[in-house]
Image (cartoon, rainbow, N blue to C red):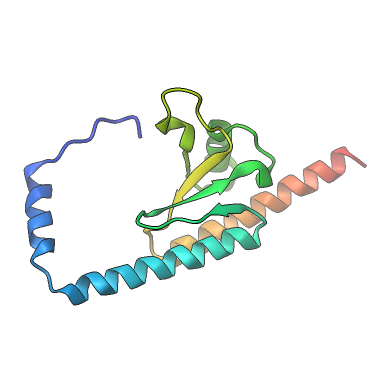
Length: 137
């Protein structure tokens, strides 16, 4: 997210190719992405996470306080290291007064990848709850 993005000529050619496709292609893509988004968001909600509704994006924003985090950068780093799941800290998109309690996950992935991410997040969440319980017994 900190890289500078450009519009290379090959990408422009790909966009032109895509725009020439039949409307049925885009209807199918919309249905597929909506299904993935809804399925992934429902899985995150089952894990007790606060999922913010989204439209027109490939990302689901999640309130990380349900995972016991107060800082989005620390949460993302920990999720990669301990759960094997990557997310993006929303604070990276704010120049001033960043929101630190929300991260985003990309759902434009194969369903098996999304299912594995949910399973890993579930294991991670259970592990954190177990550690918390042991500390307070």
